[in-house]
Length: 243
Length: 188
Image (cartoon, rainbow over all chains, first blue to last red; front, side, top):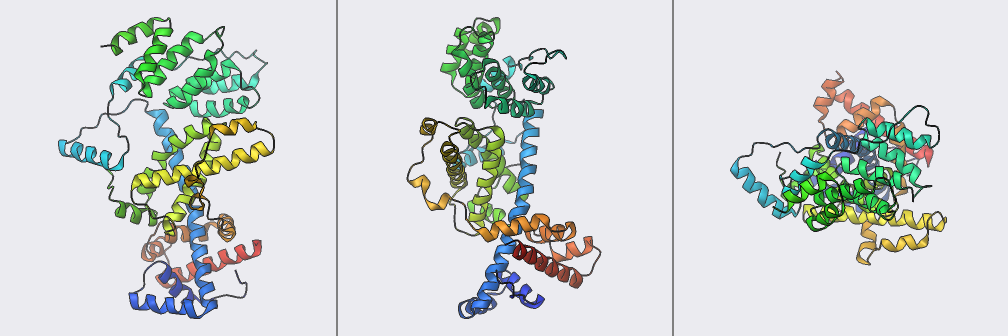
């Protein structure tokens, strides 16, 4: 930008109207001609264009944070999907839109129904005041038990950097992600702990993997894990799935 | 609320910074990109940062018509590829600093089509300077400029909110833009 290129308010508003598309086509053409012919004018136009896009970009950043927070809030507050009364023609339109947009819409899927019925978040480990070693992990555990899964995940992920192979850490990261309906991330974490067959929560991990795969709409793999898992809930859910 | 998915209307909405349209796109696309990053040595926090950078680039390119999407899924795909490129760059620099094994990079591949310039940031230094300058602008100017240029409120409405007349408000806008320009120039 040229320091000496200060423009008057009149000139500023003219260029602004041009950039915002407010000019009549004849006026627009006049401006475009000036841009071709006067390099200082061209610079002023480019400068204002950058100023506007720049301040809009910075404004978008705060909007994005709001979108993000609302997204997290909605997912934490409503693990069950609300059933909204829908008129038949809206359903038709929705179906067409799904096809047109190639995206997935929220409908009550059998897998989701089963998931909702059988999933309860792991209750977590006891966090007694006397626990001094691995303070950071237990700090995250307190957050987890309060239901702040997102924060717990963030705290625990920091620990992962130095403890990638810690089964307990991976297990709870899996559990917390599943509580937030992030089944893909949960699958990743839970798979890691299965390599160790001495792991204390191996059975729970297997059961949660079954649920995670169910949520991910992979019934085959879900069944495999439910069969592997020895607990009561697994046999109950297997009966329901196989109907 | 059913979204009007006619691409032309959607593009107009995006260019007008329509809050509902931007929110819809933002919330629809985050999780998929979060998974990509989590699966490739990233954290949720990194996923959010990368995603927001990618979303910003996508929006900038739509506004400047450097990218003219033909459908909403076109936008989604573009956003995904921009994020993938950005994450690859992060991984490469991490490997370079030896905090990551080179072998872990093998999991994430970029095809030739995905690596083209179209998916990279605008790389406009001046734009970055303006953004930083705007962040430091006084609250009054920031609010006024954001209302007019980003939220597309009319001068009439803004003027009445400020209990000023239209001419004074226009003049204030001009002076705020001059200020923004000055801060940008001083920082460059």
